[in-house]
Image 1 (cartoon, one colour):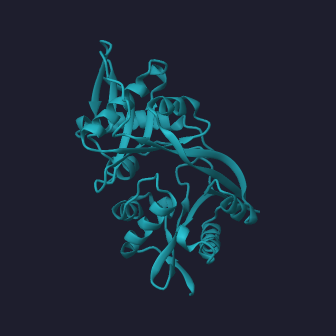
Image 2 (cartoon, one colour):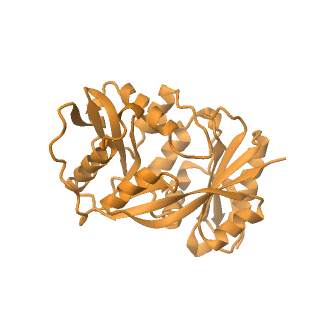
Image 3 (cartoon, one colour):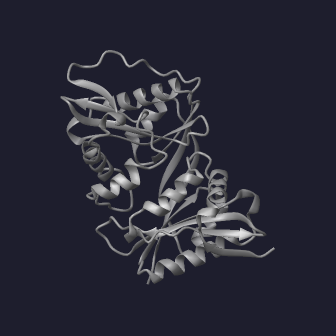
Amino acid sequence: MTVIIRDFTPDDAEGFARVRRAAVPYMIMTAESIVYDVAHIHPDAHFQPLVAEADGEIIGTAQVGLVHDSPEPGQGFLNIYVHPEHYGRGAGSLLARTAEERLVALGARKLFAWVMDEPGNRAFAEKRGFRASRSAHFLHLDLANAALPPLGELPPDVELRTAADFADDPRPLFVLDAETMSDEPGDIEHEFTDFEAWLAETWRHPLLSHELTSVVLVDGRPAAFSAARTDRATTRYGTVMTGTGRAHRGRGLAKLAKTDSLLRARAAGFTDAVTGNDTGNGPMLAINKWFGYEIRQTEVQHVRELG
């Protein structure tokens, strides 16, 4: 059975999402979300997913593009996943080769790829000239049975809201998101300055739940938040970012925001909570452990410098 590699089209969305869910079950992705991402990501990213197809079935996927919001030019990314039932058929190698050729043609000089922390996957990356860098965990919480703490009495200067309360003017949340994201550990430096791009890629994303995204106000201004995504077709809820502005750290506001979001999610009928953490983000890992999250998968970012 011949494996072919081709560009993703909207008709591939269900198959693309199926492969991703099988390979990374603790990351929320839907057919709708991948179509939205392709249509709304910044044009400077040159984002064009690839699919590996065999006998009319999609068995592998690749997300391919340039890091458009970094001050360092020439950085590309390729994240490749093959359905576990179709390992050993060469789909991963063909996807990698096609993705690398495309990124080189776009002027990439450094490539980044997330690889599952398993011997075969790491060997695959190293064989292609990639070296291991930082790692990250996928975590799961049995939300239906978790012993979540009550919110308790809030300090007089603290108020809890949701992202839905900022529907008329989300810019304060953009400012807070940009500040906290800039402090996230990572190999790639980002500049979060494009409000319109944030509106398209984050605020209006079909997976983002404004009602379950909790925001902590201090003296009436956003100081911490916990952003939530759901696929709306299951009872799975995901936290994609929890952070506190620099001026308000050390008060437990991130934990407060996440507690509120988790309680809201459970009240709305969600039973499984997933999230991801860089292994170097000790404070957030400690918070998630305190809630009862358990590590289920680990991935390792690999880097390749091109001559």
